[in-house]
Image (cartoon, rainbow, N blue to C red; front, side):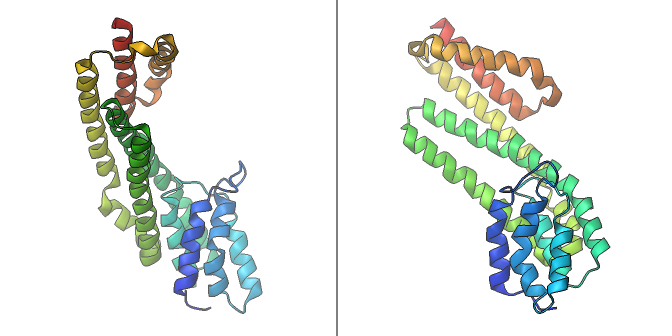
Length: 249
């Protein structure tokens, strides 16, 4: 086996951005996972075509996790392969981490980071910033967090291999998600104050704005109880305030 080169590691990381490109119901992220690992596997099994074929096949198995935190498993699996870890250990490792990586990613990104950045962008727009500037700021801030998470996950996976679970627990990502949700709740208060301080609100938008807002609010009340997180409460409350203010004015 050959040692990993910087070029192989970099190529694997860059490919991780397309890990969902071949998503399907059978393997989910598995096909994209194997494709992303190819540069590293080719380096590891250089001169051993049978070993390369076997390694690619085992990584084509079903695998699912949050697409950003899948990089933790990607880096760790690459480290295991480079260390000559046996096939069953590699498979068991991927099976063990996919659930926690999915849950942590959903809680941190979809339920905390995305709603918080969205709420901040909505507040800036309501304060009168140009739409292009608000959209630009949203993309920069959201992707700064997104890219940092991807890079960090891949680095700790590649460094720690099968021991990456300890690093994940020490990072306290769940607690970080809760703190971000608290910021979202604060932003709801800011947005509510800005809306109530305005003199015209969205009254000039008429039914074209009010009706969809009411529909979204009703939908949130109907199905939101299944996952009634603080971020969801924040978003639905903001929609309700905007709709209510538009009706009053």
